[in-house]
Image (cartoon, rainbow, N blue to C red; front, top):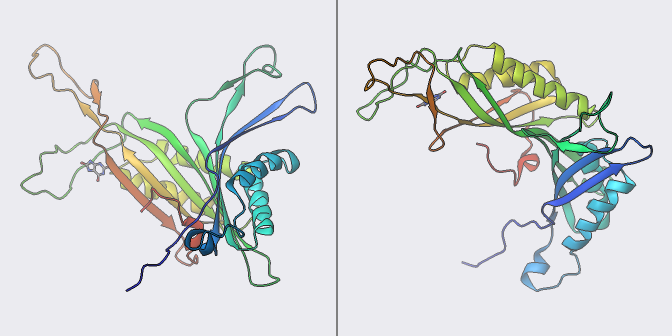
Amino acid sequence: MSIVLGPNQYGKAENRVVRITRDTARHEITDLNVSTSLRGDFADAHVTGDQSKILPTDTQKNTAFAYAKKHGVSSPEDYALALAGRFLDATPAATSARIEVEQYAWDRIPVGESGHDHAFVRRGGDTRTTVVTLERGAEGAAPTPHVISGLKDLVVLKSTGSEFKGYLRDEYTTLAEADDRILATSLVARWRHTSTDVDWNKTYDSVRDTLLELFATTYSRALQETLHLMGQAVLERHPDIAEIRFSAPNKHHFLVDFSAFPDVDNHGEVFIAADRPYGLIEATVLRDDAPAAPEAWLATPGFC
Ligand SMILES: O=c1[nH]c(=O)c2[nH]c(=O)[nH]c2[nH]1
């Protein structure tokens, strides 16, 4: 038996990069949280203490900021691809570079005809995400890009059109069947593209719209069924998306029991929104002919 170094990666986590475009008096803001990681042959840094193959995390931080100017941020995916390419060029020992980006949305403060030129209010709600991994190819070959786009904290609720019944029962089952319940979740979804020839912003909007549309317009026999329907629609509408993964807490809303108050009835009108525990429903919907891409998902936790 010997003790050996296992998988490892390193980088600078959560660089808060804010890019203002100010070519005219009407500014634009792009607000990002960028985490970089390099994987490869970094055994010496761990085992012998030789750091000669290590591009410092401080340099990775500087590059993340410099590229926000030098390359620009037309979309988080495009920026992450450029940054990953730079890290592979700059770090011969790296076999892949992983860039994770969250984008926080800002709206113009609504004054005047079309909002203020340079005053913004942070939009609440969901956050756009991407994870780009660029895998070095064989000598002379181009690196292989993996692009996962996504969102998190998309909180949705429907006040009818949802049931949960017919489930397995045993001696510990107390749950009453529900014919008409509230269905609510705070959705995390990540979808993997098979191409980089993509209009990232348009596709993101379209996937988000599809998720919301299917949640709203389909009858739900369980959160599991709803996730499957949402995933199916995304794949049907986007041929370049190979798979979509969901993590969805079932935000339970329990009907309040007013039986102690004979003059108060409750026909699905008053609920207690429970915080914890919550059901956690996770599912992947994929094309059965899509080649698996384990490198794309490495170090992206939170999915089954
Ligand atoms: O949509 C649901 N799926 C479940 O698996 C489940 N389990 C449960 O208690 N309530 C629900 N709701």
